[in-house]
Image (tube, rainbow, N blue to C red; front, top):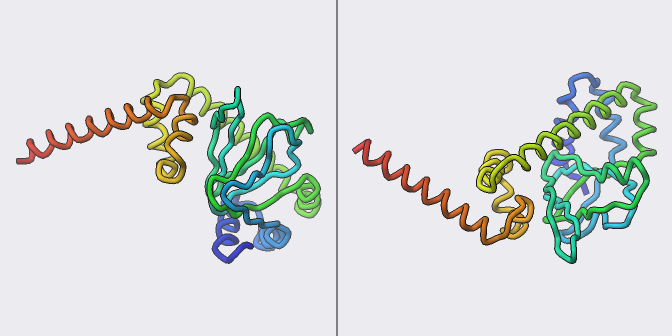
Length: 209
């Protein structure tokens, strides 16, 4: 169930587009479906056809693929992130990935029919949605390019810069999988970075003294 805080988060996000009137924003809010899920609940399983899209108001959702019986984490979605199995939804084909709640979650739930109805009532909403899809697609491409061209240590540093909140919200082994390394390798990288920071801090204190 949505509370005022959740609605305010959504209102703020929609307002950032800057071209919708207060009446149009309220119309969207009035027609928004909000649902709560428990940690461990699946929003989508491999083999299912995606018929819904989500927007995270609270919580964390993990995307993973099952490869030879092993979970390979490919993404985490947290507050104000859209969530969708894009290929499955657009092509109406079985999803190859899974979407599972890594925490208790509160999300908006969208469908094609609801989107069409909202675009019918607010025509310029369609261009906003298309722009968001293009922006998110571009971000995914940039993130992937950065990922494959970065060293394991650089990947971890990028995570600390861009999504530091994940470190204390999801298990160590899932972070390692997301970064494309073993948990042992991630532990060594963490230790190396911590040791380097401690060394630099000690040198700074020596200089100040």
